[in-house]
Amino acid sequence: MPNKKSLRLDRFLSNQLNISRNDAKELIKKRLVTVNGETAKLFDMKTDPLTDKVVSEGKEVLYRKHIYIMLNKPAGVVCATRDRLSETVLELIPEELRREGLFPAGRLDKDTVGFVFITDDGELAHDLLSPKKHVSKRYFAILEKPVTEGDIKAFAEGITIDGGEKCLPAELEPSEKPGEVFITLHEGKYHQIKRMAEAVGNRVVYLKRISIGGLMLDENLAEGQCRELTESERITISPSPI
Ligand code: URA
Image (cartoon, rainbow, N blue to C red; front, side, top):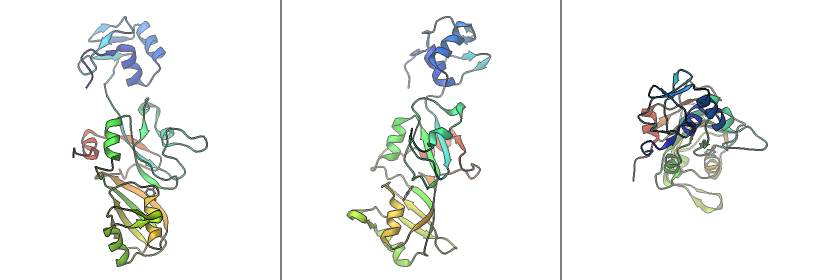
């Protein structure tokens, strides 16, 4: 929670409108910004983002401390903030949702599609990724071969993947079509599902993350599209304290 009257007006405008500090100063200089009905004159005027009404160019600037985005990642895009060779998930975020400090909280492989959570809230991301919280992630996968009762049992008991790493118990649920399954993990190891499939003599041919922490990927988002979470979705995805 920011301190009362703790934010400089130019910083507030730059953060919330996703403009440079110089552009924010320009707006103030041109007398285009009011605070509680008074024209702002000072760049460093202290504002209380929770109670002051800031209007820029006739439009109220609504304060959001953090931003929470659900993205349906397409294949071929990497979960990184920057990459020299490939397009990153941040490049898929439209101008109006971009701001400093955004990053993907958790990674999907380049060829995996589906739900990526992007935020600038380090605390929530840390909680989501903490191995102690066991936040569940559900995937839809197409495997090369149909799964067996033995595979389901092995997943439920905790598979040992290459290199001797023991996985936490995971749910493997076959669907109607042979080879199509739902898998729920409670941790996030590197290439985990692909390595689990290999450990039972199978191979992943398609992988999509469909939910994180009980929050389902919005079916209306086409691959490459994203939207902000609603307040109740943000609460759903936030791990409860342990
Ligand atoms: N498991 C994988 O193998 N890849 C992913 O992208 C996610 C889970």
